[in-house]
Amino acid sequence: ILDSLPENFQSLNFVQRNKILSSLSPDGNYKTLAPLVKKKFGAIKKRKSNASQYLSSKKTGSSSAKTKENVDSKGAIVLAHKLDRIIGYGSWGVVRECHLVKDPQIIRAVKIISTLYPSVKRRFKREIRIWSRLNHKRILPLLYVHETEDAIFCITPRIYGGTLYDVVSHWGPYDTYNSSFPIRKRLRIIRLFCFEILDGLSYMHYNGIVHGDLKLENCLVDEVQDKEDKSKTYNHILITDFGMSGFYLKPKVKQNSIVSVRSFFSNKSYSESKLSSHLSSSNQNMRKRSNEKANGLNEPYCDIILMNNSINNFMTPIRFSDNKYNKEISSGNENQGNLPHSHIGSLPYASPEILSDNPPPLGPIADIWAFGVLLYTMIVGQLPFNSNFEPKLREKIKKAEIDEKSLKQACFYDQGLLAIVKGCLTKDITKRWDLNMITEKLK
Image 1 (tube, rainbow, N blue to C red):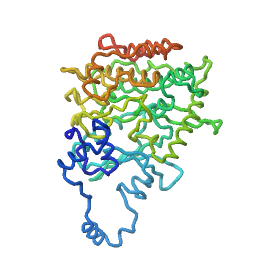
Image 2: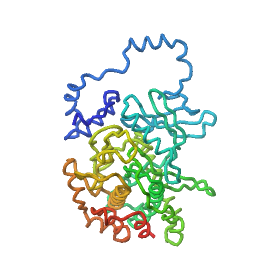
Image 3: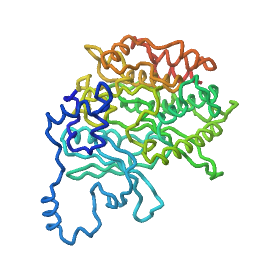
C-alpha cells in the first residue's frame, strides 16, 4: 500500500494526503495508515521554514508588491490571464478559474501541474503532445500551454455542467423513482450522449489515437446557450484527460461513421433541445447544491467524491502518478513500445485482455470496452464490475460477467442499448463490437 503512494505525496497538503490515505486504507480511515506513513517518510515538513521565508522576503524586497507572473497563486498573471479561485485539484496540482486580463468577462480554466518530480512532468508533457493535436467539437480544447521550471499551465474553456459522473449520481439507480427523469427520458438522453461520445472517440481512432481512460469522470457536460433564446441552455459532451492516451497503428474507423445527432432526434417525440434543456435545468440544481457545500465537486478536472453507494468507490491506484482515480504506471514513451500494463487507466473500466498475463498492445478495442462500462453505468446507475478488494475486482473483470438481469430491466424500453452494452462488454476481442457496429445499432 505504501509503495502505491504518489511520488509527490509529501508535498501535498493535509486534506489531499488524508483523502489518499482514506482511499487506500482497508477500513477507509486515514488514521489507520498514518503511523506507517509517518514511519516511512518521517514528519512531513513545511515546504519553507520561517527562516527561509524571511530570507526570501529580504531578497525580493519591494518586488513582493508587484504582480506575480507564471506562478500558482491567486492574482498571478499567466498567458495574459489572471488566476482566480481553485475549482478542482488532484495529486498532480490544481485547476483554477481565470479570466483574460484585457477582458475580465472572458472566463476560462487553467490546469496547473506541479513538475517537481520528473515522472509527473514526463507524463503531462506526453499528454499535452497528444492533446494539442486534437481539434474536434466533442473534445475539450487546449487553448494555451506554458511551462516553467516548477509547473505546466494548460488553459481551457471553463465548463460549468460538471461531468457525466455528476449526472449519473443525480439520476441514481434505475429503479429509484425520480419524477424529473422517468426511465424512458433517461434512456433517450443516454442515446444523445452516446452519439456525442462516439463522435469524439471516432475522431481520435481515425487519427490513430486511443483514449485509454474513457470513463464518466472524463466526459464533461458543456452547457451551451441557445443563440436565439438566451434563456435556454443545452448540454453537450466534451471528452477530456488524455494522460493515458497513446498512438496505435493502422486506424480503421471511418471518420464519417457517426450520424448527425440532430438528424437522429428530428423525428422523435423528444427533441434534442428539449432533452438537453431539461437536463440543463437539472444541472443547475446540482450546481446550486454544490455551491452551497462550497466543495467544487462539479467543476472540471476535480477528484470526484462519491455521493452514494450506487457507484462503487473502488479507485485505489495500482501505482500513482496523477490522482487517486487513475491506475497508472508511469510511461516515458508515447509510442507502441510501452509495456501494456502501463495502459491501465481506471481499473473498473479496464478490459479483460489488459489485465491478462500477456496483455496485447493498447488499441481501440480497449476504448470500446470502457465505453460499454460507461454505458452500463449510465443506464443501471452502478458499475458493472465493482469490489472493494482489488484482486476480486480484477477477477470479475477477467470473467466479464455482468448483472444482465438489472441491465435488461433498465433497458426494457430500449433493446438497442441492451445489445450495445453486451456487444461492447464481450470478452472475446474478435467478437467485440466496433464503433461502426455501435453506431449502426444506435441509428
